[in-house]
Image (cartoon, rainbow, N blue to C red; front, side, top):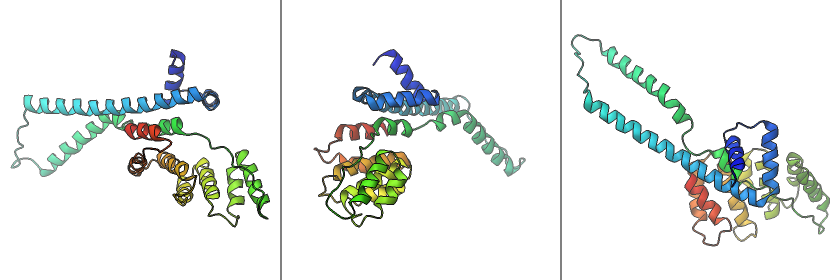
Length: 246
């Protein structure tokens, strides 16, 4: 990875690029599989470094606090002469100072979920056409809408199909809702896909991405751990890297 690309990626994940620059980089990522893989690795490493930095800062603050207590022990208050509200006021002041000094660290603590999502997201190609039923025209109109990124239009068409329980229909309804930033609805459809379906593994990975997008980290960790129990899971390396970055 060259230095120019590193600068672009850091600016992208730090939200320092203009909208045109962001779109240009995203187009490059979609068009170049090798670049997309480099971005995934960079995002995972960046998230791990940020998390480790927060851990080290918290440990350093703890050590300094212990050293300060040893060097200057606090004398007990003379409660017979001072109001009990004084102790409350002192505690509140200390909490306020802690919030002021620690806020920059706390506001950026934890993994960058947006960066991890961008690194792992892959657009799903439009499904194939059908030609074996009287409702084929409805399905095909939905496929056309999906291919044109009219996800709301595709949903409106596919939800009127008589076979909304088919794995293919469920998968692309879930994907359409994911594209519309409606993770709860997306999960509803992805989770209905039966384990014996050929789309089951793909749906499980999309569930992981949907949980990542919604910010539900505890559920995402549990889900990724279950995926890693399958040694043949097609996204095993990506699932492991994502779990380690959380």
